[in-house]
Image (cartoon, rainbow, N blue to C red; front, side, top):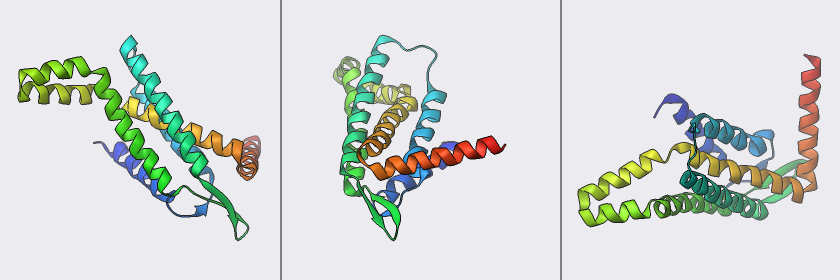
Length: 182
């Protein structure tokens, strides 16, 4: 694992852990994960997507979007000491576990025939096939699932909570003002 991947992994873990405790809402919570996921997905995209990979991608995007929606619906947004706060709680972690398990299930479903054939040939061919399936799937597919989840999470919070909407508008207004000063 290279240095950048380790740093990104640490940032993702921090973002996940931050959802377990009540904290002040900030831009990083709403936009950090989608930005990281866009960069990682785009940087890993293959030049060509065949039909099977496209269907697998669509399945993972649907899974990610469903999990992100569910996580946002279960997130508690409230005011504490005149600050906008949120907490995702255990639902947020459960959503990540569902995405991980769903990714494994989808990966094996789309490679079922190759894995079955290798299984019947014995343990060594089966082990080699599993390693090949996992190594050739690419982390961009994982990041695309995270991307769909985090975008749906942010959009759902934006849509369901007027305070999040106001916070987002104010943040974009601040950014626009900074840009015009340059």
